[in-house]
Length: 336
Image (cartoon, rainbow, N blue to C red; front, side, top):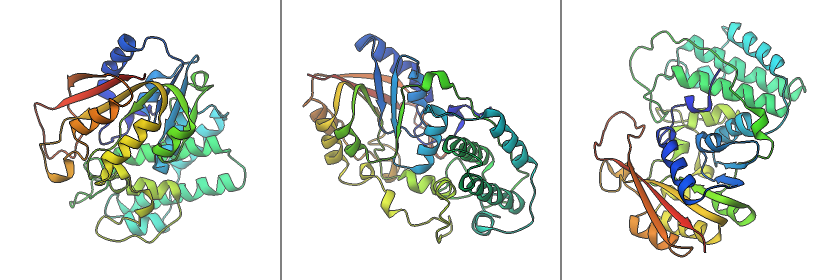
């Protein structure tokens, strides 16, 4: 089975989840609802997921919305049926070229694997249109497909580029997801702008982990976004990206501090936690923070007293750089 934490993802918080939990236990105690408003793969929401809690997950990328629904929403699904389709897909072969193989074969995947991926994606679409599977089952199959190809892709963990060497044998295998349905009964999943969602949503704990640098997640994961949406757009450039102008994050632009201030001011919550990695003055320009420590504190202080916790942290990167003195900062506010 694939667990929610088994995707490679820039800035993922797997290693500091106990640290975040410790802060919540000490500063908050018992709570009924938590909103992970920049969810990414959803590991934070999954960590705190429980029968007696409501986890609200949100992400701007459709691929993450699909995954969040697969793992964390409470819709019913037929596990036996899904497993049968997974077995069929793993055993399938095709020699016919398709949209996916024409654009990504010989680059991110061996040509035969790319043909298989494109074939499976088209079959999932047909199954859903014909009502052979429901929406939850579609999301599970799509997520399993994304996790399967993420494990074998000819990359260093993202899709800004592929490794320009001969592609080795790729062991493609879809698996069932580890879904704890009993814990999902109260949950919500959203695919919208975080600054809009906070205006319409209330929670006890608001956890914020926005992108802080110019590295757009839709650029790093365009291939999975393309595969999830399956609108077959024209792609361009060496990396074969599609037009992503409508899903660019304001938090990776010069307006990031302004957007963050708007988010904080309009949030309806009792407590705020903000994860922040202190890469502002190190690394290349694309890694430099768009929001300064001073701007973060200025915005958060409008809602209450700011406490800062820090922990040594080794982030998942492109593999080109390491910083021994890297710190993960967590800002905490009890809202007045």
